[in-house]
Amino acid sequence: MSDIRNIKLAPSGRQKIEWVKRYMPVLKSFEEEFAPQKPFDGYRMCVCCHLEAKTAYLIQVIQACGAKVAACASNPLSTQDDVVAALVEGGADVYAIHGETMEQYESHIRSALETEPNLIVDDGGDVITMLHEEFPELLAGVIGASEETTTGVLRLKAMEKAGELKIPVIPVNDAQCKYMFDNRYGTGQSVWDGIMRTTNLIVAGKRVVVAGYGWCGKGVAKRAAALGARVIVTEIDHIKATEALMDGFDVMSMNDAAALGDIFVTVTGCEDVIVGRHFDKMKDGVLLANAGHFDCEVKVSELAEMSEKVVEMRSNVEGYVQKDGRVLNVIAGGRLVNLASGDGHPAEIMDMSFALQFLAQKYIRENHSSMRPGLMNLPEDIDYSVAVRKLKAMGGAVDVLTPEQHKYLYGD
Ligand SMILES: NC(=O)c1ccc[n+]([C@@H]2O[C@H](COP(=O)([O-])OP(=O)(O)OC[C@H]3O[C@@H](n4cnc5c(N)ncnc54)[C@H](O)[C@@H]3O)[C@@H](O)[C@H]2O)c1
Image (cartoon, rainbow, N blue to C red; front, side, top):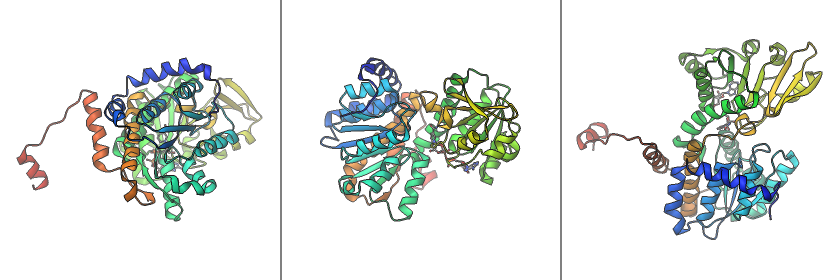
């Protein structure tokens, strides 16, 4: 059983998956190594992620390793209908349609949970939350889950603190091979890809305001500078703000930045980062985009209330016309711009993130009897093993310590 737009779109989806596979050598090496052993034989897995080509390849590898997969979207706008058609053709149950309403989005997560998964890959924490709130009877059958993103990890930490998290979860986001690459280089590049292809405007010479200088924000700011923008960073943390300043960016409050920026990108994981008092100060024609997980960073509902009317300026760009005639342009409705206005992170980046997801699931499958409910980091050697394969695939190499050097550094 599936609920998708149109199975006839599968050929185009297959082509997209074939393309990314060529650039995901680490995940491919796991497929070649583990598929013959079928480590997930007899297991049902629920995958809730951005349903585009790279995720589809992860699902194919998991299927090749024996699991039965049910997939749903982690964002109503990031689903690619042709890709999910190809997945259904390949035997997965998929519940996702690009542009689905929030009601549909939630009912699709419900449908995926109704397949009674033993393992969960989540991105943002919606599946794990719904599992606990609406399907407590299924908790006993879930041996563990892995979580992809910062916001999901924060939600799960809050559940754990409240004593409400009843299954073991590996926060894949917190592995070095995830946040140092996916959040920084992946978001850094794909945010600008999404903004540029959606607007067809230049970045060079513009004042770009990046809200949040965490792993994602560093990447977004650095790539903006590389494109020739003059970058302003806003932060709430003095250390991150100082880091941004020493990295060469202007640092100020959003109240001050609002009047200066041409392009705004929020990437904080916080709510209400850009609100009415900021919209009031903005220049005519500004672009507003969000790259944080939820669409609560740019307060679009308040902007709508302040506006005379909303006009579709281009596909995926809405112009909020103010009473004084200024037009503030919101890209992709304030949803994460690299996925709702683009294809997400480059394949080479998701190669690492999904290699980690694969290994996290395999770890849970092999060790669940000794895992307790709550968050448990991916073991460091597993994290490191992804870098070993990635560096080799990219043609890099490291020096090897001599016994003397080893002793000098580590004493043995
Ligand atoms: N678009 C993507 O593809 C993608 C990829 C990875 C993560 N994410 C999401 O991006 C968000 C940020 O992730 P991260 O890994 O960079 O997190 P992080 O914790 O490393 O960084 C967030 C930064 O935002 C700052 N911040 C918080 N509230 C703020 C506010 N009101 N104003 C200014 N700064 C504020 C924090 O001090 C912190 O430095 C999360 O929602 C995460 O889930 C998106």
